[in-house]
Image (cartoon, rainbow, N blue to C red; front, top):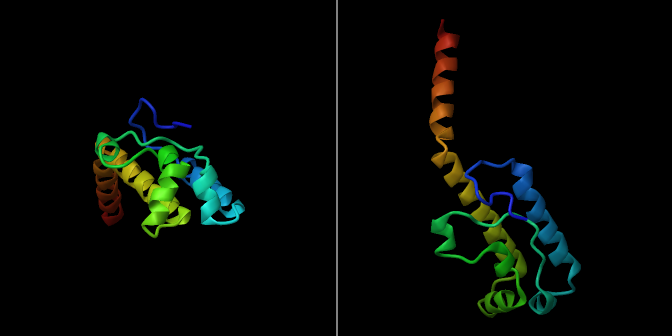
Length: 120
């Protein structure tokens, strides 16, 4: 479940999309949002590790529990809204990891080198 636990590595995009697709498929198999509120949706993806995200939102597996889905439904949000939010949160986590690991700076440097080589 927790592909990111204990490290700061950027993960392959498939490691992020696969659990999102599985959660969507699980939600589709339920007859209605009311059923999701009764049984919840199983989360087999990574946990959020960023202290910034953990301070403001519950873990994905908690967000997809029946009590949380009922809370969201009372506010007009479907299980699919919740899953879309989790996808965004995972993207934020990935972006923070890219930034923390200086991948962005390395990419910029690599592009500058490539550009100079092309100019010669």
